[in-house]
Amino acid sequence: KAGVTQTPRYLIKTRGQQVTLSCSPISGHRSVSWYQQTPGQGLQFLFEYFSETQRNKGNFPGRFSGRQFSNSRSEMNVSTLELGDSALYLCASSLSTSGVTDTQYFGPGTRLTVL
Amino acid sequence: AQSVTQLGSHVSVSEGALVLLRCNYSSSVPPYLFWYVQYPNQGLQLLLKYTTGATLVKGINGFEAEFKKSETSFHLTKPSAHMSDAAEYFCAVSQNTNAGKSTFGDGTTLTVKP
Image 1: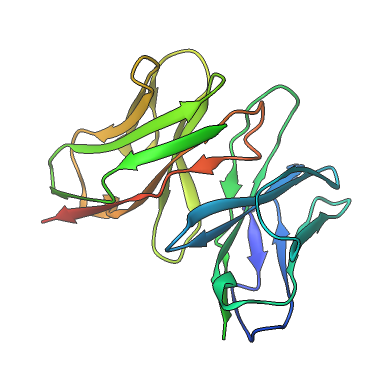
Image 2: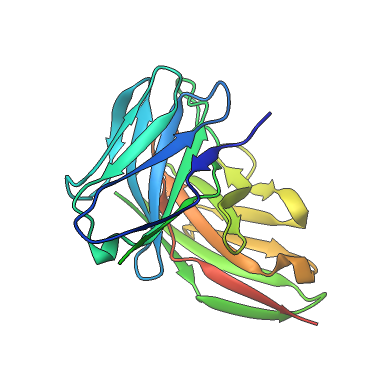
């Protein structure tokens, strides 16, 4: 079974631009979560989508948004990029069957650099 | 609310020595606990998890962890370190009935000396 894939793997943008990152979960997984990883703040939860609905949300400004499609693929968008948005963005998918804690499987991440 | 504290941002051991990475958590409800490993420029790989049941959990690559409720700890151990164990390790806690929102510790970088 193919793992979680993220595209692109590397991105370079300038301040003020916007960016869209894509995540394809493992086949059959319905939950997709996004995390931001930086040396200063560590791993921080952005949001989680399940069946095309945002189910959980972290403490990030509204510039960070996401969506999930009917095939469970997810995108996250960051508008008006700031230097501090430079980070590794990780996507994780899980089965998320009702009432069960499911293992999250992580993709390799997208390395975003904002200049 | 939930939080995770990993004691020691860097741990160095000799090859063949015991590996002990410490994790303490805070959770208002019974926690679900995880250990992940991250190699440079890669995503996170699950080593092991505790949800319910047996408090000693065995994972991949010879790692295990013990859930101690009284100490709010979930320390990761491996009897004999291998050079390939050098990586960054993250402890995480989740409160929900799914792992969609996990809170991670700051990570511990493990160095293995020959």
